[in-house]
Amino acid sequence: MIKILVVEDNELNRDMLTLRLQRQGYEVDVAATGEEALSKVEQYKPDLILMDMSLPVMDGWEVTRALKKNSDTRSIPVIGLSAHARDIDIIKGLDAGCDAYETKPVDMLRLLEVIQSIVGNNKNPS
Ligand SMILES: [Mg+2]
Image 1 (cartoon, rainbow, N blue to C red):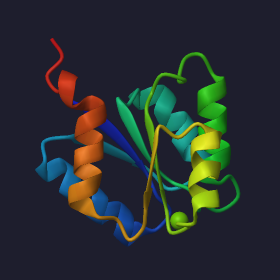
Image 2: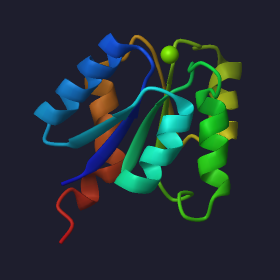
Image 3: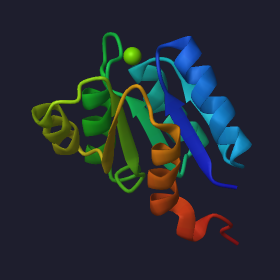
Image 4: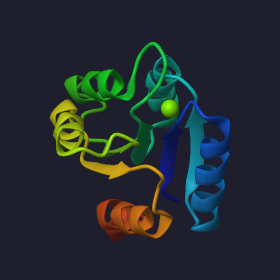
């Protein structure tokens, strides 16, 4: 089963994303802070990370940069999620190492398509 780590400090958003991803057949773990995200990545070894960029203390840009600097975690795709929707924000997200960047409020159908396009081809790895 494809494992997705949802990094989101807002509990309602976190629960909503988790539920909708589980309904699609994904296995989900969650992190509420940037620091927690880094330790969860090590333990849970997700196939994909959904990263809220606006997190307190250590934000999503910082976490993504740290993950992409580390050779153990570099290859895990990160989809940045942010209410910041200007071109400059998208460029900033991709610059930090995000493999894709979606704006909030999340268009779930679109997000599922992006996830599918990234992990879809190995949905049932042997
Ligand atoms: Mg947030």
